[in-house]
Image (cartoon, rainbow, N blue to C red; front, side, top):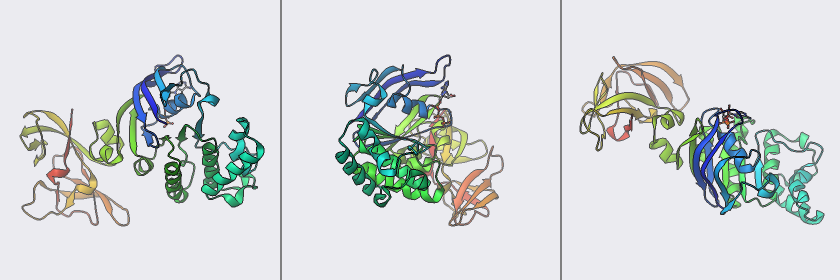
Length: 342
Ligand SMILES: Nc1ncnc2c1ncn2[C@@H]1O[C@H](COP(=O)(O)OP(=O)(O)OP(=O)(O)O)[C@@H](O)[C@H]1O
């Protein structure tokens, strides 16, 4: 089942906020994570696909079928929300079987199916338990089992892990991904957690102000962001304004660096992007792009120390990460410099 959004726009009544001309596709069995700042339109996107919000322009289609006039319950889409939204008066098994009951599946068949799914999410022995007596992580696994029980045409996950402790989150992230792949479920995941998006998704879609800025594989988004907005939103970096001085040379005002300038003409205005893990502390003499300065604020992270490295004249410090902070110089390998056109 593929999910296609073609030029989808939506404004909330009496407002200009919403979504603007968003086109994206989720291929069969693919997990696309949707990230973006608060208010960028992530939830709006899911609400339109689920049918909880209606009246969009453009086309939303599941396997070629336009969903515009299909009510929520006929879309046959599985949903998992941040708040578990389980039925407190039903036990675990009946929660999972709920959607099947609505679809008039006979009692024995729906219990069998619900048991199968509970086994799959590792909660087989909890079938008769009241949902209130489960942990947050267990409740979220029940919610996932319930969403999958109906054999959904697509799966929508709205911040499914954000109410959970960090210790549970990492494990459940792997579990949800494994189950999603096993079901070959076509999935949209909304999250504000970049790490969750980068680790779980086949592709990541970045939204801002209701517009889609980029959709690409996690590595592509991180290593080759299409714009400054994407670079600023995904991962940590140093971004500095610069001008192309000559082919292969970049003028930062306070220093000149060797950089892959490509076809850009001398004088072209760009931003330099470098990720903290690529900055070398105290590189050997003769290595390219050495900058003298001093380490400022430091944050000890266990295996690494993240620190600001201050270079005279630079509008802001370089953010670097290494086993120990640089004492006197940093090196910026030209192959790790990315240029973003202004
Ligand atoms: N019911 C509503 N009526 C009017 N405007 C709304 C409504 N719901 C959301 N908006 C506006 O639409 C825009 C997109 O909101 P949306 O909830 O989709 O953002 P989001 O990316 O999910 O944000 P968050 O990460 O904070 O949940 C925001 O500017 C928001 O203020």
